[in-house]
Image: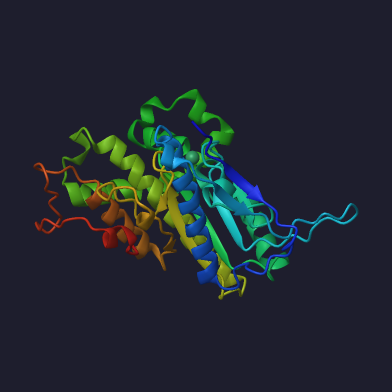
Length: 310
Ligand SMILES: [Zn+2]
């Protein structure tokens, strides 16, 4: 059986990059295409028992400076705020090479002061190259899970959660958990928390809302910095499918078409709409093959549904 390589490739005949994204739309497309490449490679690895799955996945490393004296000029086309989780390697997730992304990673992808300072630096000092800002949350996030547990069982807050460093992160995520819990109760009904699916759903909705909230905060910051042309988008990485999408629709099977980044909400109402949407998507089905909606209709999930904006 052959290997399935994930390759960084430098082409001496074309050392300079002439295809860097020049607009926010191109930047977003490059990130989505990069994630398709990465998720496709993982899928090929899964199918490695099949000979035909052998395929090369190549990431061009443009602008590799071979000069022995001068470092390359920093020129990322996107700023990414992501979680520190070791299973979410940002450049790999988006199929990008060195100098493509300005990455800020912190547990729970929370927007702490020092993170904001790093992003402000990128927006002001790397303004020639940066075209978009991305918030990337992920399913099964430990920081969000800890916050959900602290929210549901405040009397059992552990010494771990009480520690100063972790507590600052939990506090940042807490509001997103409350917004998500309210949405689940609105959509599922007053007995929501007695359902066996409630705990997992609260974590998943909170992951999405937490990313959306950070994207909203960053949108405001970008606006304040006067860089209105920069787009702020967000998505959530699925540790199983390795795909980035928003909203995260469990009823749509993993496919290249499912991958998408969503535009940051315009305000708190947009965050609440996303919370309701996720609560609806995660609402337990009442019978096989059906998924009642809040208004009593019974919509069938489509790929379009997965790609729509909150
Ligand atoms: Zn995480």
